[in-house]
Amino acid sequence: MIIDKATLSAKLNKLKSVVPGKSCTIPALQGVLFSDNTLAAYNLEIAIRTTIDTDTSESFIIPASALDLIPKLPDGEIEIIEQNNQLTINASGIKSKHSTLPVSEYPSLPVVKTQTKNTINGAELEKTLTKIIYAVAADIGRPILTGVLFQTEEEDLNIVATDAHRLAWAKIKYNEPADYVVPKLAIQKLLSIGLAETVEIHHTNNLALFITGEYNIITRLLEGQYVDYKRVLPNHNNTFKANRKQLQEAVERSLLAINQEKLSTNSIMLEIEADQMKLTTKSSVSEYVEYITLSEAAKQSAQIAFNPKYLLESIKSFDDEIIFYIGTSQQPMLLQHENLNSLLLPVRTGR
Image (cartoon, rainbow, N blue to C red; front, side, top):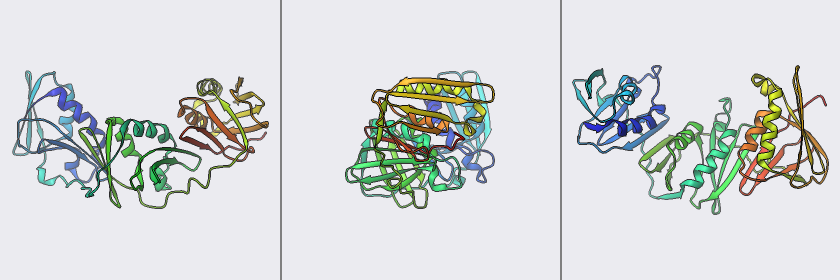
């Protein structure tokens, strides 16, 4: 195979993060499969496949050692030859040999067989996933929460993430049936590849296929019942509005008073009175207080504290003015703008 190094390197870079490490019990999966002018990586949970224009009908596995070398080769054409389970790479003044495995040892990639072709606006999907992914659970104690819910309702697709402490929910237009949970890693791969103008989505009971440009991402779906996210949304009458940029900068400044390694055990206090919000953070060595003017005054005074990291991530997910719905100091607060909702549980303080 003769191919431009930059072209091959760019494709491999998109696939490498799916390639499992040395702990994988199937050695062939530690490389990238080349077959029928297609590159593929697979870790038994997620597979990525992309086409590549070459001059050969060969099939071989590019081993991990070669995956590390190829990006560092000089620009220009390179030649890759496989013979007797040995991969030889020739570049300008360079000849490198790598042991590889037979293609027959590479497991078959999962196949998503559906009769329908469902498309969605790629730019809207990418923007939405970027805004909600922060709320996906990292703790595998509840596996179903380590993914993102795709659920249609009439002509809207609800995209939801929660870790039981905060929840992010957005809607985009999509009128095809959907009710499944996509693992966070698959969502991260979609975002790292970048979504085309139009994305195809296909799914079965246990698999989903996303086709974006030259890339196919196939992922296993998470099993289990997702939380009833609509039931937890509060119905508070006390509302106010704040400028997202102004509030974000104030929270970021206030966090400087907190040991960054102890964000999860500290809190930020919000005190709202008419059109003023007072932000307070404290630590054993410092205290920070800042007042900001709200763009729309609160109907009632309120006082509530949050995990500062969670509050900042929620605020940063919005683009513009945020509407806040607030109850008591022990009830969740809802942030909203257009089709994006963010729910935050408060923390208890001694105040």
